[in-house]
Each structure stands twice: as structure tokens, then as C-alpha cells.
Image (cartoon, rainbow over all chains, first blue to last red; front, side, top):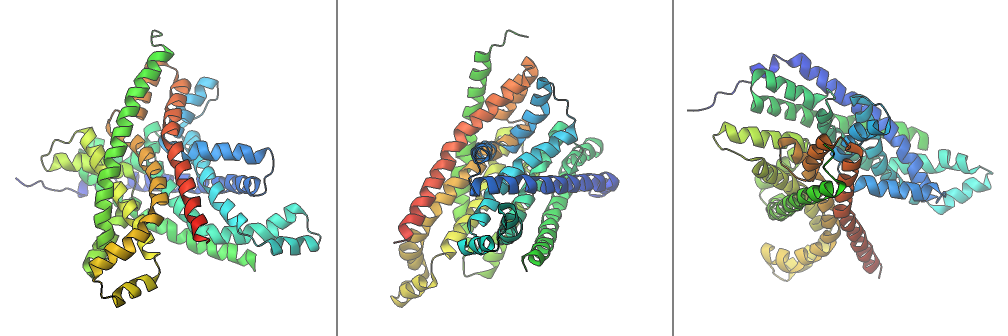
Length: 222
Length: 218
């Protein structure tokens, strides 16, 4: 007795799928922008040994990179309220993504900053540029350009990782899948379709980021 | 409710951590074997084998681990197999691990200079002999550091299996947090548990990396 696949029963819920996809993308986009900001701060603190921030970021990076994203999410969503910080599921999800991506991009961007040739900084100093100016105009753009592919990979990994945010009831794509399969009782077909959506998202997000990044940063390095 | 002491929490979490370790080891060993097969397919002369291996790697690296687990869990029951959370977790993490290890190792093999292939070919070694005596021994040396580094991802990946009901460290933590109303304490302990497992691996991988780069400078 063969099982009759029924993918039509999944597509009946396409509005739910579209909504979940958009929320996953929005979560990724917000998380990426803020996470990169944290990463740049962390990277310059670590690369230029700005005490005491270099030590703080070192501890932060190790703590985040050696614990699972799901546990970080639970710690933020369930743990913080018991300290009196009220936080809803989206705030928790965004915070978790930013904290997680910030740690990884700190290490990635640091590698880019440390690869800056010494002569470039000396040349900038001889032009009487201040430390902040040197960082903003001389060090950061080429450093970002150099490590941009690694950043794109990390963003994709984080986006796929956000699927566990369904566990704190953030209504992203995996939550949509859980909702649909609880209605149409077609678990396999539903998860298959949603997995395919994630796969396409991963390819698309990577392409868009690589194109946009190269263009945006390349313009500034000229 | 308050008769669950901090000691009880720690002891239960320790039990959960054992399952995390067991699953990590299973996935790493089986995933390593499958990853080796993938590596050979990926660098085979046969273009179909190469293409299939590449497709496999892209799919497993391009989709969430949670979705892979769901599909195995529900797909198994579809073809009439009763799959326990433990089995689904072991299969899912093994496939996930094999895709990453296969790709990491391919990078190592391809980083061996072409001259090594040419030199060994000029000594009339066959493809298999070239691999066995010239390429793999050198690739292995480079591969150790990133392989140990990736083992951290496997340990962290096991946390996701709590969602399909496998009772490891994270799931134990969730149940304890519900029972004790002390999520901050419990998830703090859970995070510490993962850190205790992962940090030594990360640190070791860094030491290995430095060693290789150091010896190459000579």
C-alpha cells in the first residue's frame, strides 16, 4: 500500500508560508545589521587591544561560540524575565541572533583588521589622521571586503539556525510549518516544502549579500 | 515544588549531559565514516559521483538541522518505520556531520600542491597508491585542526535534537526549568555544561592550528 503524497494540502496555506518566510528574512536582516555593528566594535577592541574591552569581548566570544544557539535563546527568553527584564518572543529572538552573530563576526572581522598592512596605517598617520579616522577610512573598508565571503556564510548559518526560534513561539518559517502540519496532518509534505524554502532562501540570501557587499564596500575602498 | 535542590538539578543535568556526549560521539564517528566516503566521491574521477556528493553537501549545509530532523522523524513513520527520537537524532546528526566533514576534508586534499600528484604519477603510482602514500598522509596533518574545531559544532548541534523529544542536556534543562521555576539558574547550568564540553575542543583546535602554521614556516 503506497502512501499518497499530498503537497496541495500544504500549498493551501501559502499565505502562512509567505508570512513565515518574510518574518525569517526580517529577523535575519535586523540580526545581521545589529550583529555586524557588535562584530565591528568587538573586532577593533580585540585587534587594537583597547582595554578593558578587548578582555570583555574575548570572554563574550568564547562564551557564545562554545554554547548552542538554542540554549542562548532559552537563557534570554526564559532566564531574563526572572531577573525582572520583561521581553517578548521577537525581542528575545532578535537579541539572541545579534548576540550570536556578534560573537562570530568579531572573530571574522578581527582577522580582516589584523591583515591590514602596517604601511597603510603609517601612511595615514603621516597625513595627521586621528585613530578613529584611520579606522573608519583606512582599516575598516578593506578589512570588511577581505572577510565579506566569510561573513556571508555566517549570516546564512545564523538564518538557518533561527528555525529553533519556533520553540519560543516566534512565528517564523518553522513555526509556520508546525502550524500547518498541525492543521493538515501532512507532516512530511509540510516539512519537505518548508525545507525546500529554506534551501532557496539560503542560496538567495548568500547571492544577494555577496553582490551587495562587494559593491557597497568596494565603492568605499576606492 | 521547592524540594528540588540545586544538587538535584546538577545531578539531573549531568545525566542529560551523558546523553549529549553519547550522541555527539555517535554522530562524530558515524559521520566521520560517511564523510570519508563523501570525500572520495567528491574527488573521484567519475563526474556523476562528484556531482551527487556535491549536491548532498549543498542540501545538508543549506537547510536547517531542525528541518532535517523533522523530515527523518516523520519520513520514517511514513514508510512504516517506528523511529525513536534517539534514532532520528543519531541519523540526522550523522548525515549533518558527514556533509561538513566531507567538505572540510576535500579542502584539505585539494590544498596539497599539484606537484605532489605529478611527482607521484611520474613514479608510476596508481591513483589509489597516490592517495594512500602521498596525498592522504599530508592532507591528514592539515585536517586535524579543522576537524577538532568542527566537533564543537556537532556537540552544539545535539541541542537541536531536544526539539524532537530526545532527552539530552537541553531537554533536561527545559524540564527542570518548568519544574523548579528557576530558568535563569537552570539554563545557566546548561550553558556551563556545553561550555565545559566545547571549550577544551576549541582550545585544542587552536593549539593544533598554531602548530601546523608554525612548522610550515620552516
